[in-house]
Image 1 (cartoon, helix red, strand yellow):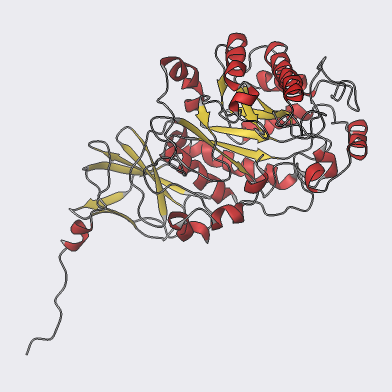
Image 2: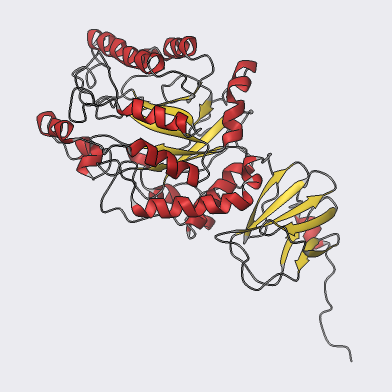
Length: 456
């Protein structure tokens, strides 16, 4: 992943005023309609009919498990250890001989993803370190010829399919191990060799494992899209996997955008997926205990659902393939919440309401879901709703709730003082038409006020 976007704290410090107010809570979410990307670049073109067809399942899936797993998992200091610590290649290659995931590791990953309510998975086939977790004829720096003596991608793909999960493969174009990886930007002969090598590895991944649902590129440095021959690369992939979806990190347009460690909707109907770490690290870091809470994960899911984006949540397994215990606890708790409230996420349409401060919203048709993340007890309110409310009920237990509505607010009363659900309580508000919220200050100013002064 991008080394400059690893820290959630650093991300929050630089995302501008709209997120600064939320930074104290550690939540990144969009609060305004999307705009053109920074730097004045044009928005990507709207989706083609073929992209709409290929992306249909992906839009419905909404939530996936991202897995960074490689030799760096043995080092246990995040996935950039080789580069950031300037570890010599012969020293780093020792991990390839020691690397030996336990039997059944991939089945445990799938079990966790299913318990978490996730619908698809993405595993690193090759990260920037250059080690291939799959059987390849193009290099002996792979899991079949080194320590494991097994095709780890094969084990993952088979386990995911057996568990009914959609299968995604991550591939880093950048390569710190290949002799041409560092010089290909300034040496045409090296570029030719390295691009042929890269296309060849991708061809193997797209040929040898049956149907692949997602190709998740990363590591576009040091070449540009023309240097990688990215459009030719994508054409090859589509010829081999006509139903696949691809991101844009090989520097071609691709099918979807990938904001990293932030939630930012694309414009022009562009599909997008926010990828985030569960703690501060992509690859396993034994000392990283900055875990996001289940509430934070649920709120991020809600924010993605509100703007019809996907959420790809990353965990870095330990060297033997075991998931960190805290990651299992958090993901499983979120999965329990989705058992009750999943319809408010997986069936969500684009949603406009976003106030008050203690709640966020998703929408399905005319039903507005009010996700109360800081339970105030007794009552909640929604101001400026521009449609009539027909009924309201708690998602937990489907119990009807009382409400009143006037020109200024919907007031839901008679609620229990303690939150009925954890980590977020959701109230379904069924409306006469598509629910929108007016943020016009004139509406607030028109509200009747009390008298000031004392009569004599």
